[in-house]
Image 1 (cartoon, rainbow, N blue to C red):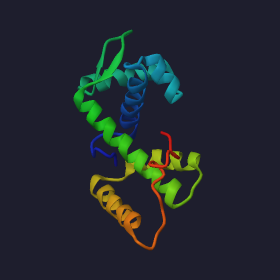
Image 2: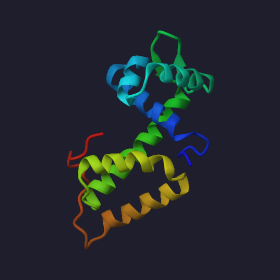
Image 3: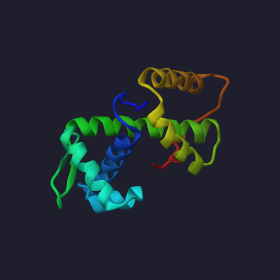
Image 4: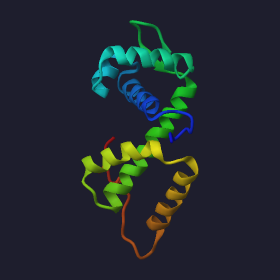
Length: 145
């Protein structure tokens, strides 16, 4: 089940990738998306057409790709889940950063909104426990997306 309930993991991965590229380079190109996701450009083109039909992206063949406000909203939510989950695995469970990142990438799509909200509350309890000395890895600059 996708984080947004009706979106596939694949769609979410595209939106998250476009957000990352757009943040770094202002816009994304299909070539950059294919390279980042390690897939063929033809596959990217097909998905970009689908995402444009759903109004998640602005896309013209051979042009730049940018997220629409709706696409950006979804991508930001997925990115936040990823960062939060990675932080949990890395900081609390003390999993190495690469494994934490890979696991977070898979779980960010599977956890529904209600479960994720409860998970965040649980982690907040751990973080505020007076008997725990766990420091947020993000605030220490230990995690990078």
